[in-house]
Image 1: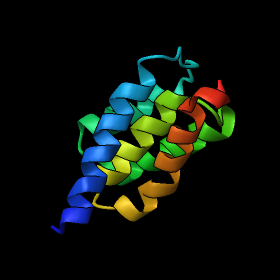
Image 2 (image 1 turned 120 degrees about the horizontal axis):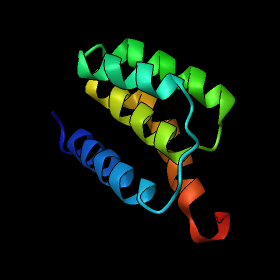
Image 3 (image 1 turned 135 degrees about the vertical axis):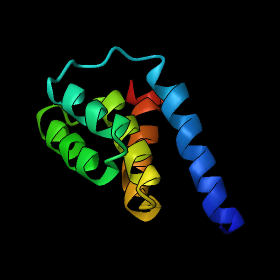
Length: 96
């Protein structure tokens, strides 16, 4: 794994933890299904469910963080980058 890729993975994990802590997430019922799929290591399927959840709650930082993590776990870090950028943008001080 390249240093850049390892850095992206570390950044995704750090962003997910740090950014979600300050927000109260919308409780979309699809989160339970996506989390179950993650627990079964079915990351690609979980990512699809997280995307469906984003259609309902597009600015939910919990969904964005967990989608980013699922894509990363599936080895699809390039697909995760737009969601990570969106997550960081939503948590910027001027976005609140």
